[in-house]
Image (cartoon, rainbow, N blue to C red; front, side):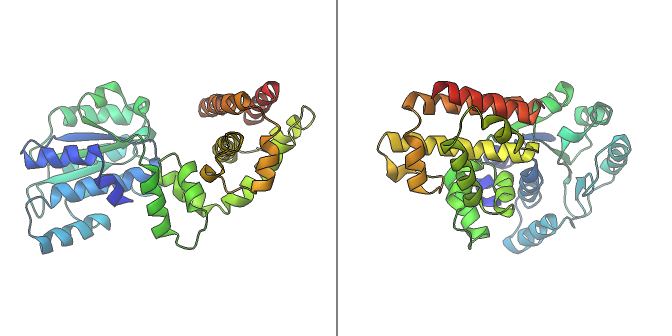
Length: 317
């Protein structure tokens, strides 16, 4: 996954800053994948701390950074903890201690989206006037969770998603025994963390079969029970991604493009379901699913949102 990150414009921007001798004192990486933020920030720290070093020494430092054992690369907060005012205060005290090995010292805050405003405010002075040789690498899964005063003091790095092909290659290497990596790559939305969650949560194909049956047998009478089956928000988000893929496949079947199917569902059942929905309904279903996803991100009640989605799809059928 880290090789994927090295190909992004965000990484190349920091790399270019180093090559041109204009490294910023603070960078803010915005990536809507909290599970991948820490790894990406470590890659940036490796690039900064190994700049200009011989290969053997660079490999040693990169290895120590990856293991969180390099004395000049500090990660806040500690695993399983949140970065509050006390943790920020402790970090600020360390900022004024000279680096142990090289000319730079790096502080990584990998979950600014979880920091309260008071903790973020505590950063402002040091971000405005950092000690010489200190670089701050901030990461957030949401731009709006970061105070505007913090955003304005750091150089912004945006990574919206990774290419689907790169996610698929990553999954094939990490999960060589999974037969459904292509489907998982599509469902991941280009986010390695989400791809890992899907790969570790059981068979995508089995859940897909269940949802294909739901789509095939959808009726006004079945909607309430179907909506209640999506009990948790995480389950609903995953199911919506699968539904998006299923309705896409139904449209491909209606258009005679069976070669483009991705969901992994039983093709006979998919073909039967495709006959129950006109092409316009299949196209509009994508919009309804997107609306439901936005509602869930805004903390809407899961069964109510799913029920409204299913009724909307039925009305177009």
